[in-house]
Amino acid sequence: MSKELSPSRRAEQFVARFPDGLRDQLAAVAKSNGRSMNAEIVARLRSSFQPGAESLPPLVQSAIEDEIKERGGSVADALTRLVTMGQAFRGTILFATVGPKTTIKQFRKMLESSTGVIPDETSIVFQSKPAK
Figure 1 (tube, helix red, strand yellow):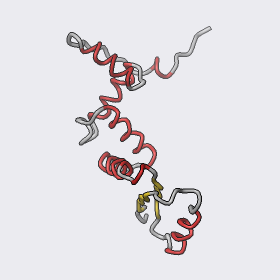
Figure 2: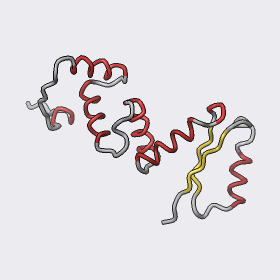
Figure 3: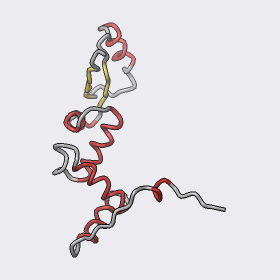
C-alpha cells in the first residue's frame, strides 16, 4: 500500500543557508502576511522577477499579484489600477471594463441601473478592453 504524496511534497526542493537573524526576520514577516515561511520565500522570489515590483513592500506586491490574477496586465497596469482605486472619493468605487463595441446607449444603461445601488459619491474607474 503506497501513499501518494501531495503536490507540495512532490515539488522541487532547495536547501538554503541564511545569515544570522534572517530566518527569524523572515518568520516574522511571513506571520504578519499570513503565510508560511515557504510561501513567503516563493512570493518574494516571484516578485523579484517582475520588473518594478521588487522594491515594494510585500503587502503591496501581494495586492499587485492578486490584481494581475483577477484582471491581467503587467505589474505597471495592476499598480496603476490599484492606485487609481485607492484615490477614489470616500473609498467607494465602481470598476467597469468597457469593450470596444460598447455603445453610449449601453454605457448609459449600465450607469442608470446602478442608481440606488451604488452611493452617489462613488468614483468610477473604467478600463477599456482592446479590440481583438
